Amino acid sequence: MARQLQLTLLFDILEAPEELTEQEQVMLVNAQKAADQAYAPYSGFLVGSAILLDDHTIHTGNNQENAAYPSGLCAERTALFGLSALHPTKKIQAMAVTARRINETSFIGATPCGACRQVMAEYENRQNSPIRVLIQVGPSTFYRCQSVQDLLPLQFSRESLKPIL
Ligand code: THU
Image 1: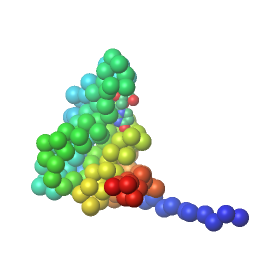
Image 2: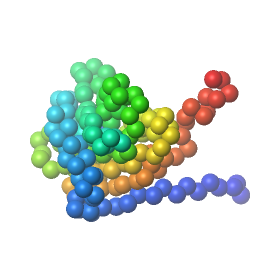
Image 3: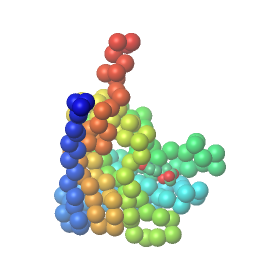
Image 4: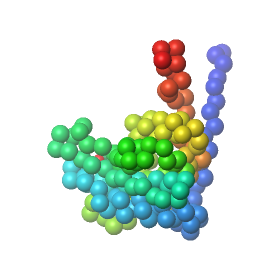
């Protein structure tokens, strides 16, 4: 039988907003406010992301859609690219993601797509310190992990390009 690689991914499951730390609650509210301002006329799915920096400031992003569908961008990448463009050296402590449908008020949440996980991994590796991730997965349910590694194991990264660069 082939040898096997077993991976352990660790997530806290929080079952009420009160179970989040105060800082996480602030991040969550900021992510929800960002979702409210998303431009998502085609999917009607409003996603918001909030990034907590080392200096305790918060930077947000939301999904931006386009009539030419692939030209749009997810909330997580809008937030990260915007932050990196404005403040390339600021360190990220944590990131929160939430979502709701355009015609509903309650946040149902969503987990980051694969492309966003790849981008999140890039910035975690760039700053060489873990980014905690808080994901709303239901109206009052949240997953929390301590690193993007838990969302994207077996990463393709700068390391993979080393023999070339
Ligand atoms: N979306 C995000 O903003 N983040 C994700 O991680 C998943 C999907 C957006 C993209 C599109 O505007 C809408 O949600 C429906 O896919």
